[in-house]
Length: 314
Image (cartoon, rainbow, N blue to C red; front, side, top):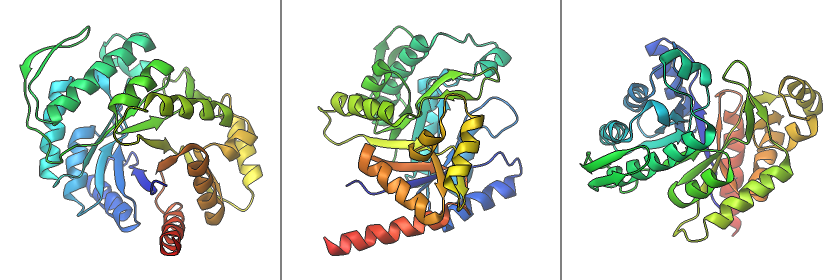
């Protein structure tokens, strides 16, 4: 069974000292990686923050969850990521997606193409970035990118991990062949604010999605890792009441699915640990990213203790 990994997505703090302190707290709490998101607005620009987070810590990995592919040309992106990988001592993981916040596209005058176009452009970009980070000279005559012998610095890591966050069968098929990690989102229509979505978190739907990924990844030399971004961590003695309240505020979500899906962590620390363990057993999701340090740190400790016990007894 694949070992658990835990990521922490930094908050929207705008204070540089506060950001450094935040990632240091995540490192001390036992997280494996700290993430930064990528949104146009007053939040942090992601690539500079990756280097700042690495400089403020000693061993925790740093990554994006996720960059918007349409805001980064693959050659420029590979240059920056490779440089940060060297500067960090080989601690970078690149997360990238097709983009969804139409309000941000409109704000900067970038066309918001249909999902199929954005996903196809992402697929081209992932292949280009992978080759550049691996040290290849890339000539590419695609629909969206044209390169003629482009090169960048190769990553310090022999294979810098790439996470692709996508939905849809075609996009997942490509990610299963080319990504090291697939970020499961299981989200539906983007709502009017450009940020929130309808949830498609029914367990049987997740079953079908994971089965499709596994089928598409049969020719891989190593298994694809599955990640879930936990949208909320709520420590409580009344799981049912909290799940019902959350379901009332997320379009398309039922209370029953809120309790079973991998995208919410509700309950006591013991219950949350058991829930994540069950999600790994059912779906093979071993990599969970959260947005809370203090509430989630005891869960990491409980799972690490159980993993160590399992190792001792086998």
